[in-house]
Length: 151
Image 1 (cartoon, rainbow, N blue to C red):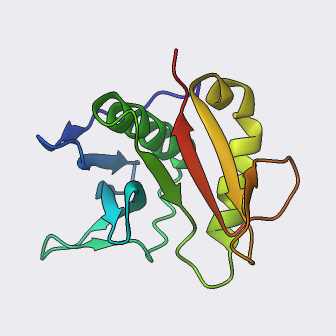
Image 2: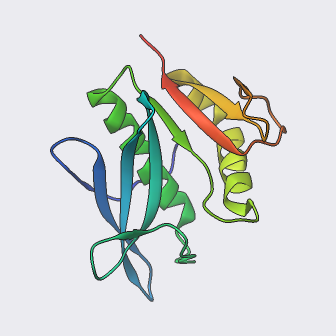
C-alpha cells in the first residue's frame, strides 16, 4: 500500500500489534491480533479492533476516525511482519459485522491493492459454501486467506 502506516508495537511472539488511530478529534488505541485456529495449526485468524479499558479487543466497534486507509496500511505492515516470523503459516480474515459490510470493504481494498499484494501473497477467497479459490475480482466472498509467496 502506498499509504503511510501508523507506527506499532509488536509483541515478542509477533502475534499482537498495538498502535493508535489518530484524528483531530480522537486518539483510539487499536490492536491487530493473530490467533491460531484450534483445529488447524497452519491457519491464523486476524482480528482488528479497539482496545477496551479492560485490555480486551473489541472488533465490533465502528470508530469512524477518518483514517481508514492509514489503519489498513498498518494492518498490511503487521501482516508482512507476521509472515516474516511465520512464513509457512496462513492468515484468515473476514468482517466482524453480520451484514457483511466489512467483508465487502476488505474485498474492495484487496481489489484496489491487488497488484502490490499479489507480489507478496497468494490471495484466496472463501465463499458461503466453504469453498476456497484463488481470489477473483468482483466475486463475493465471506472471508479471505493470505499465503506468503516464497521469493
